[in-house]
Amino acid sequence: MFKYFRKKKNKQLTEVLNKVINHLETSEESVYSVLGPEKIIAILKSTIESLSCYEKFDKLELKVLFAVTSDIQEISLRNNWAEEFIELASEFDEYI
Image (cartoon, rainbow, N blue to C red; front, side, top):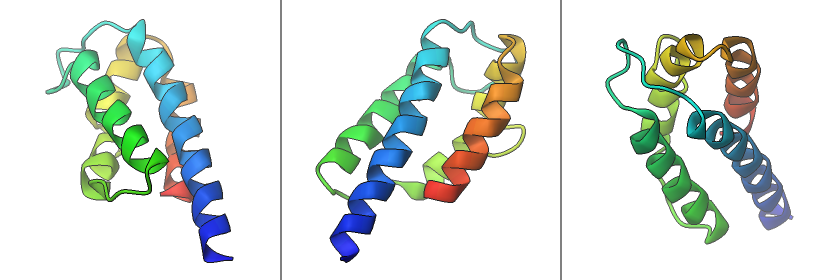
């Protein structure tokens, strides 16, 4: 039973991360972001790989990336997908 819920949560979290990656792939850097889109994409892809193998990943690092005024939010503001970021961040909070 626990494995079913974990598998479902991992799938939902992976979907959210993939949506963010899709936005980041076409985004420009923000002067207010420490990390650029490419570095964030690498972190998110590494997390997706860990999720698919049920391995541990750095939840704190992800929480920081999705926090208000974080790198992802700053990039989303610069690239006109800030409203969708808020929705994705809410989903992220639910699944993390």
